[in-house]
Length: 339
Image: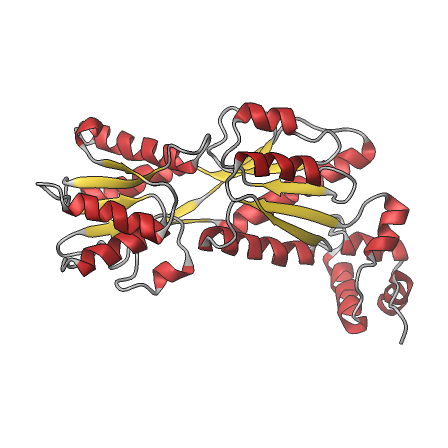
């Protein structure tokens, strides 16, 4: 059998080629029963979008790019996998790039991916300042930014409220013990989620009548297990060690727990530890890790919806104002803070 066309799908479903095209492009104004029939025909015939033909007809490639700081970070790996799954459902192919949280590489990614190869870019910057991003924003290629840590930036973005999430976690930890510490500020990055997590931490301390300046805030070079272990070693060497520790990522928390247990401390009886991100590894750690769960599927859905809207507006020549989507989070209390 030759390549399946939209006409083949339309004939099998008993609809027009235009209707098949609308379903493939996930156009929202298709009757549910019609969408179901078309989808069944697509699945039955094994239809695959011909990207090269679509590019010639529409001037679009059917490819979007996703640029993340580190793909070996479980959080970004899980987020990228979700982008691949959801984009495929929308008929998009994904081009993935890694910036290594390096300023020059982040610049090259935006400059290099903003040509005609891709229809849009989803981007999570770490080393670029807001001014850098404004200067680099491609004129023709829609770009959606990920991250609450981008301050006062004109443009489309998707994030969770890191400060509110951090404050909620800190309140939980203070209910266990007021001898608290934080691990995870990254001063080496221009714009970073750790700063808002630190702001939420300090706000909760102030609200509880604790001077943030009296509490250890340990800096790290990266959100890694090794840095978490190193920082926990410093905390455990203090004359008065903390009883609860908030790590600004799950990887930091896993490293911190490893070091505490290596030195003979029990988790959480001697020291309670919490993280942030809800990576899969944290659920299977010993003990399972208390953390903040960002709505990762929701983040991806919102980013792709914004990208669809921008592409549609570009097609009709009517770009709208900047849009911002703020997604939810959940505090997950597990055994690392609760015996």
